[in-house]
Each structure stands twice: as structure tokens, then as C-alpha cells.
Image 1: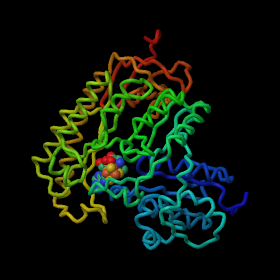
Image 2: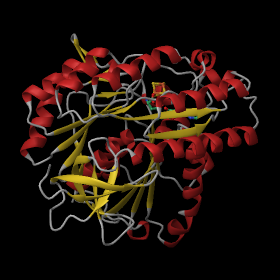
Image 3: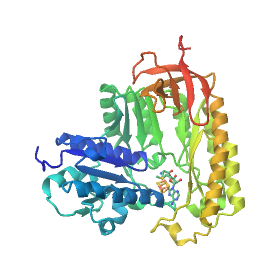
Length: 440
Ligand code: SAM
Ligand code: SF4
């Protein structure tokens, strides 16, 4: 091992989106290949990595809270190294070390993969590295979530500059991986026994590489690889084409789930958010999706309390949620992000009002989610067995085509297999089912 022997074990805490989970796995693989051992208990680690999220203030506060707490480990074990990487590191740089002096390394979104080399090369010191343009777009490291499912990043960064959002600032401009590289990495995954892949990008629908758009890319993956189950996220409503829906309709290997963030049901707010579509356009896409696909699960992201959002505009969001009937939604109250365009707007919806709107929205969506899940009861879903249920020791867990968790008894069928599961029961968030004896 060419590294400081004090650092043999590492722990990564990941905050935020799938992109961060993917980055953490790549980083973990890099560390493991250099002889470090991953541990899942912070107290056993000699290197603590925090892969962070900047999307909302609360996400950053949580990390600062955790950084405060781990100070006690550092006092007990002075050789312990602490690295803050990812979006917060990118956004705050030096300021993290100013605020939390026991942090050793701060590495931005393009630099975090250099951590293993940095550990080998630098004794002491406190490197802060946040310059862009250091990533390697000529290779893709697919990230295995499990031995049978993986994430493949098709593009990094984002060009949309929604006015509330920090992502383009912390992850840079959109850069696409080439279709041939994506296809090759998926072929390799098939050879390794992976049966489900999730293609990742902040806006997969704006994917473009030498004239190849996203539906073309999916078509290439379908024709050139044998990957049995293919998912993707996130879809931006302004760029989702009928062509994409048609490709999905033609091949059952494309899983019928679309994550289509609406954000707001009010046209004035959508415009102020810089989203680039109207509610009418959004609903037209939803109608087309539902008309073309026999079965589809739709999920979304929503923000309440955006600057100047009136009660009537908030109600337009509720109305849209009722009209679309989402299977699930991630719901947030607006959080000011310094440096974004909306940070220049008056954040005039009071916190308690934001909380009221959010709680009410959550209650409305919960009831809709419950109703949508009731409609699954009696249906047969080809589901990928993922392992033991996290909540119940007796039950196993699988993922349906629509990306829902179903709890059932695998009766000896192994994780990684696809089982025909009959849904028998459902609550607002989880399905229950049993293996269909005849698979019919
Ligand atoms: N690119 C994806 C998209 O456009 O949906 C994901 C972006 S972000 C990581 C995930 C969600 O966080 C957004 O869809 C939005 O609902 C929410 N979000 C982003 N910035 C926010 C802010 N300043 N305040 C509250 N929610 C925010
Ligand atoms: Fe942020 Fe908008 Fe880009 Fe999504 S599309 S990452 S919300 S700027």
C-alpha cells in the first residue's frame, strides 16, 4: 500500500441525489483499489468522507451539524482525516475550513475523484480544490448499486439555470458522454450479470452528442445491448419529446416510470422559475404519455413558497397534482440559494406559511399516492428482487416496473432475479404482494 498506514479504513456519508450516490461509489472504488477498506461504522474509520448536497439550505445545515459531531472522534484519534467533497465543497470552498477547522480536505464536484492521490501525496496540509475541467469525460465508471443493478451517468452538469437552483453553479455546464461509450459500458454490465440499469443526468432529455438525441441513445442501448431493464432520470418537461414516449411504448425493456418534475402549477411562477414550459404543455405531455403507455408510473418534484407565490398560485399546484395523480412526489419548500437568480427576488412567503403549504400538499399527495397504489392491487408486476426488506425481517423486497417497492416472500428466489409478483395489498408508499405461481 502506497499510502499513509494510519488511513486504512474509510467511511462515506452521502447526501442528496443519485448523482452523489454514483460519485460516492466511484470514489469508494478508487479508494478500495488502492488498498483502503470501506467500513459502515464511522467509529471504525480513519477517513471520513462527506459527499454533500447544496440544493437546499437544510441539506447544508445537516452536514455542518455532522461535522461538529465528528470533532469528538478527531480528538480521540488525531490521525483521523475528514474530507468534505461534492456540491457544498464546490460552493463554499475555503469557507468550510474557516467554519470547521478540523476538516482536512475540501474537494469540489470535479475534484473529489482525486482524493486517493491526494491522500498518498500530501502529508498534513489542507488542500481545497474546486476548479472545474478536471474530470475525465472519456471514460464512464458505471456504479453498481448491487451486483445486479447499476447507475450509468450519461451526462454531467446542467445548462438550464432554473432561477432557484444551485446545480449549474456547483456541477458546471452540461457535458454528455458519447453513445458508443455508454453502450459499451452497458454491454460490460450485462456480461457481469447486471439486469437493471439507471441512466442518469440532471436533464436526460436534453442529451445530445453528434446528432444523437436521448430517444436515439435509448434505441441504441436497446438494439446493441441485452440489458433487460432500463430506467432513466431526470426528465425535464420542456425537453421530453413524443419521440421518447414512442420509443418507450415500443419496448417493454424500458421501464414504465417517468420522473417529471413539475415544480409549480402556476404559469406565472413557472416562468419566474425559468422552467421553460407552461402547465398546459406539461399536461399535454402527461396526456400523451398516458395515452401511449398502457401502464406508467409518474413521479415529480414540487416547490411551494417560491418568492411571490400567492395562495391562488399555490392552489394551482394542488390542482395540477390532483389532475395528474402522481404515484409519488418529492415536495420541498423554497430555500434561498446564494448566487442564483431567485436569490435576488424578495423571499416574501413567511416560513410558517411555506410550512403550512408544504404540509397541506404532502397530505393531498399522500391520499393520491394511496389511491394510485390501490389500483396496483390485483396486478401482476415483473419485479426485480433486491434483498431483505429493511423494515421486516420476514419479508423480501423487490422493485416493480413502475419503480415501486413491493414487499413479499421470495420463497428461496435469489436477489437479482426478476419475479412475477401479484400485488395483494397497498398503502400510500409501499405495495405488498406474492409470487404468482403460474407467472400469469
Ligand atoms: N435536475 C433535476 C430536475 O430538474 O428536477 C433535479 C434537480 S434538484 C437536485 C432536485 C429538486 O430539488 C428540484 O427538482 C427541485 O424541486 C428541488 N430544488 C432545487 N432547488 C431548490 C431550492 N432552492 N429550494 C427548494 N427546492 C429546490
Ligand atoms: Fe436545477 Fe433546473 Fe438543472 Fe434541474 S434542470 S438541475 S432544477 S437548474
